[in-house]
Length: 77
Image (tube, rainbow, N blue to C red; front, side):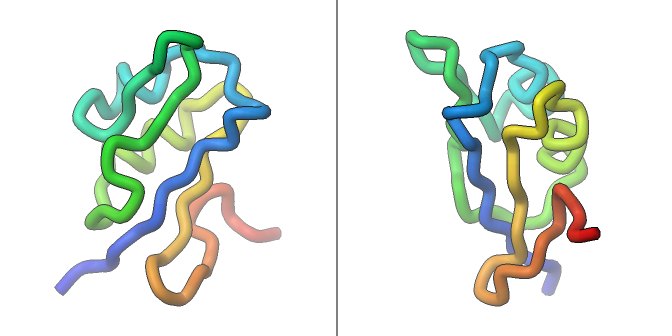
């Protein structure tokens, strides 16, 4: 069984670029204010979701391991 992730978007940081939707259209949506929201905050580990987080120009997307809370993205330094 693979990892499960918890996905959050810091809407105070999100600039509504839409890159997350471009990378993972099934995982993110923009609301009427162009703020990103994860479609499924708790999800299976997924390369498209990771690409969306990595491609966010302001790093507004945080991914942690579900249950343990360890950072997947951005990585802890």
